[in-house]
Image (cartoon, rainbow, N blue to C red; front, top):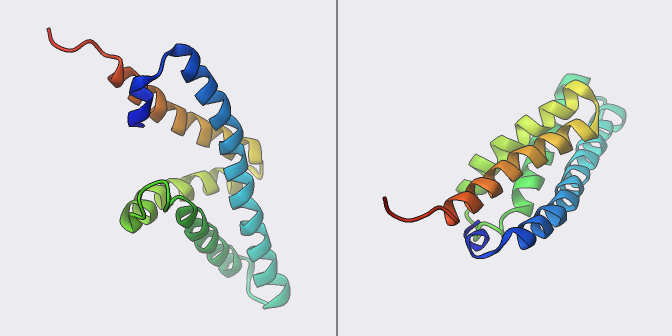
Length: 128
């Protein structure tokens, strides 16, 4: 986020284009394991769909949180507490709609709002 303060508008557009692709990838990287764990729990372990879904959400949320550890300096609390909470909301958007584009869109809107906020703060005039 802090590096956004030092870039210009053209670099910001390129940054957002790269993150657009990355965030869709993060959704695929999270939803596919969610579905795999759900299938495994229900089909192979004979668990109810409700229990299997709960396990799948926990596993995919932990997976998503762990993927963010290097980005956030291995801060486990931040990754599990903040990133994990956001992941649950994004996963719920997928589960309610059964549409990856909905969760990817929510993910993009959320992250871009943070990025653009950081960019605006970094480019705000000082003083007055």
